[in-house]
Length: 364
Image 1 (tube, rainbow, N blue to C red):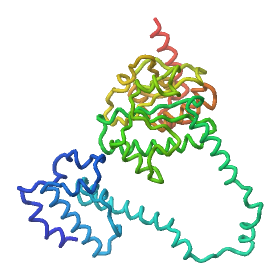
Image 2: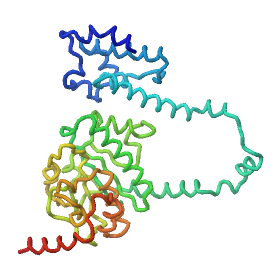
Image 3: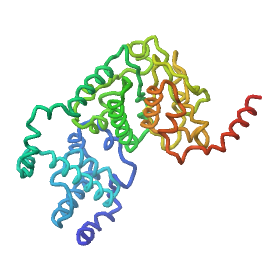
Image 4: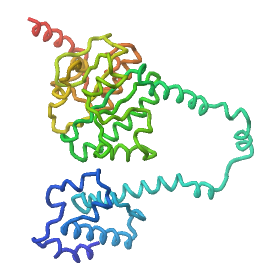
């Protein structure tokens, strides 16, 4: 590897050549609305030199016997071109190797080549009629019932994820957001009282749509899953969508004073969560929620959480899990918050006295 670095050291030191990693990444490297093959075909000269260097680096690692993937796709090359240095690219190679191993384990041809080490009793049990009456059959029935409830637009209670924050997030936040939306989808499927999920303001030619589609297991269109994908804005959906018409809509924001009371729960109300991961603490959700017929609300966490309102901004998965728990309990916000928030953020019991004194002073 040291010979490889010394070979390209004069090229790297050339001041006339500036690679994409030295400056801020261009927009076309992070725009996933354009096919990766088209982006690679239209690279400028500095990025072409950087891409050729990365390909030579990849071949050198393969010759040395390092753990690298056997082949790379166009979007993988584009991701490598967006990374800042060799260490970041090497770690990305390790991630691709793990992905390749997982695919090999699911390959049906490799599964048939494995030796059958089962005993005669196990083979007999798997071929009996009673084997069909097991947990899998029950789960299949429950999944059919829950999926019908999740797709019922008029009866199911709706939770809207507002994807109008794309201009406020970078590529890292969008990828993390897609991971959380995927976890929320599976948490909703396994719940006994699921919500009807609506992904609002989600354009098909956007980075949010691209990475969310990539995170889902089958990598098919998002419209095939148990949710509603809408390109309309939140204000338009409130007037036209069956799950939001003639219903009270609450926009959840940590930067407002109005909170839900203990025991307050409306089964016909709809909740809006901003699909926004804010690493810089920009207060924009309370501005997005100022729409006709929409009430801004904050989760009642001030009695249990230390810190100011900025400490009450949780990720999407935590907020959705709290809503699921409150829906199952019928309005028990205290139990839902204490179960879904890490204990290190919670107040001690002796601090509730100071909260009572502060509340009396504030009411004067």
